[in-house]
Length: 306
Image (cartoon, rainbow, N blue to C red; front, side, top):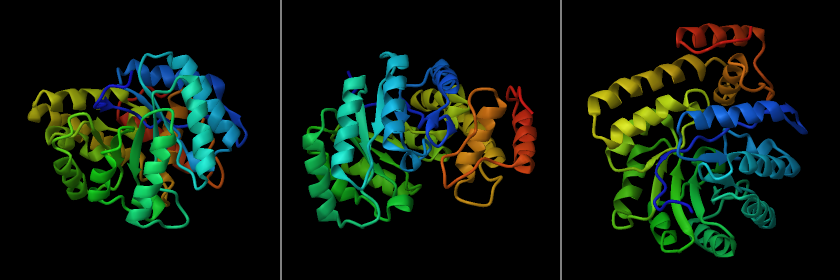
């Protein structure tokens, strides 16, 4: 059963690929075990870090089936169903439920920009039709629309909406939502950007969906645990380590895709999974790869490949 509220570190897992049509199956198995070894509290498939919009529907369904089978109930699996097509969101949701997922995650449909009343209608229809609990996903940089805090409050009245993942990187927005929902002890408010993990948990947030936990899951779990314990000195020290990871690995390239490329290149160098990127992106070339390798070594990571 899905904990209510869901708490902790729920990594948005990358999608290991051999090419545009093929999962890296051995890499996928290693990655899942690597993340779970860090004692995380869940897995989030098919989010931004998972390159979901760039994957074929067949790949999305296969990924969910394989990961749910491997995880086998050890932690809750959350599945992203964001799409511009309502029926495709429903089809993936039903497939995820059959596979054994615990919850679903949906950002607003992109391309056409919905207004707040339209978002309320859309999410109400979606949540009421789904076979599993739904987490709202606030990702304005990619969807062109912010889910207003009062829209979140309205939607939280739906029994099948279990929480919010906020990737706005706006701490005022996050705290406004948290304040509006202070009486809803069953509703989870999770932070996307990992740079704020310790702070938001100390402030009463429920945890983080941290991309860097693909690489160093135990670091993020330690930060979360220290924040829950109110150990501010420990949180400060661990959060500095998280900032060093981001500063070293996420800004090597020149484009928005640099974060994804940095994480996948690092995972490849660590011998966990390959670094193929779904088009239109491509993996780092040798120059950037060499930089990532030297920085991983400086971070103390176990680098096994050139």
